[in-house]
Image 1 (cartoon, rainbow, N blue to C red):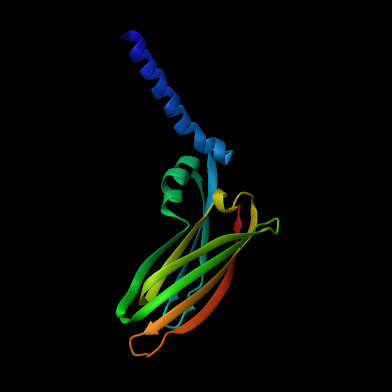
Image 2 (cartoon, one colour):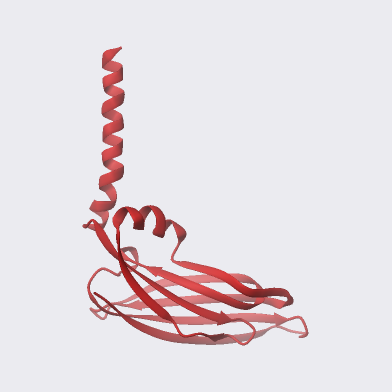
Length: 167
């Protein structure tokens, strides 16, 4: 009986150590930079607001267990209405690092009504944000929009670049 209890305790300690050490090993540090880039988009005209970039340092536990699990792109419908029409919006992103390496961050597609949305992009070590220096995010927005008053859908494209410094 004592051997069984001791075995269970050892297994619990090994599992706990693995959970606590894995993020530190993956990040090679106890803290990581997280850049948060926020911009708005008006689907009907495909105009976008200025991007705002901020960078903070968070613990690897906060990054892996909270920030990362929420995804790279998070979208909030600010004033979206499906009675105005329907849109498929695709956001493509490229990250350029201080070493002038370009990383394709992929595409995100949002389907729904027409209106205002706020997009927040979270970048950190998994996306290539590792070293101090200037970073550039190139965002391309493509949309297929069918307004309620239109007989056919129209395609629109827009894009922008934003740069920021990671200390």
